Image (cartoon, rainbow over all chains, first blue to last red; front, side):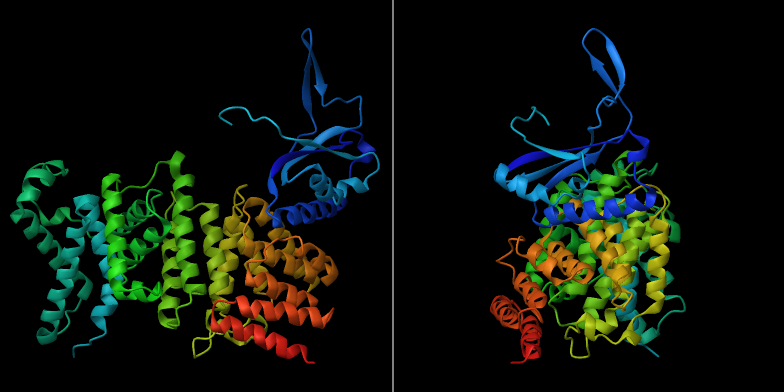
Length: 118
Length: 410
């Protein structure tokens, strides 16, 4: 089994694209039904949600407000799952309810190296 | 008149108090001496109360005799004079009775501190439970043996080794400091919860002992709730969870000690006081942002006190299981989550999820599949239940599965 990180990319900036609290509640339910299914297979490792505001530092002392306001695909959060290969990781990710939203995406990357002491 | 029930009763309530206070006073190294002194005190009571009658205030009598015995022991014991006495806070080497403080406040503090000393990560959880039963709950060795389906010798050995280990580790009898509290509390809560489960789910047929285990676990947790240093949300959540579960204690075991399935329980036997208490502590557990697994399990347990099969009930239970599994995987939670899924969204979705669980060595897995296929494909349901019967470990479980097969008809 390898570990894969799933990066959720969606528009978390544009006002009109943000769900109402009622919609949000439904989305969260759907999200937890999906993650719960992965966790029930003992393939969930962990995850975090991220704030909408942020800072981006670049070459030559450039500091901007992030996260990358110029694109509509900000990272909203991530989870780490266990899977035997990319195929299985894709299978587990297919049912992610965020993919019901146009423009949203989930990027899957295999975790290959671990920093020492982490 | 001499009531021969009073000594066992006092043993259960007073033994743990005096042992904790003496042990706190002597230091953990001397725990066996503390235990011996208290046992001797009860022996003296047995001998004296027969002919003389039970004294007006039996607890005070016991405290007085225990103090005297401790004092005599300390004065004649050479080991004590040379090694222990210099370490005691006392100014002189003379021991004063008053120093052994058996006031309600000190009894309570000593027991709490003892709880943290015993539920120490350096010994196995099995040993923690055994020692807790003996020292925090005043159980006899034979009662502990009955609860664990073991014998006195094995239990004695286990407790002896655990005490040795705690001595080696030089465990102090004290409450952890604020920064260490959550970490140490988590071990204490695990032990309390396992103690409760030992009573709630144990294979022992002895209903009285099983119930006592549950009540003791709740009592220990209540002590934590009543102390301001340990009154944390997760402690309230655990107490709430145990109240909700315990509310069905009389309904889930029949007079022959057999398990009564949830669906077949007489709702009139559910204890409404405990259900209200559970609600109260769940409310207390909501203070702050802490979300422990006990919060989630208490949430599930709350919905299980609502007998009606509503969609709301099962959607809520499903959400709690989703979160619980993300926090900590267990096969039981995975199976229960899938069952909740079937109740919330239908059997087909649940069957598809069940087949991914990869729990082929677990008989409850086949019981779940049997349940999910019932009325969808009865032939398959029968196959799965039959498989579950062959894998089930106890006769009660086999009988429960067989009943399900019989219900499927032909």
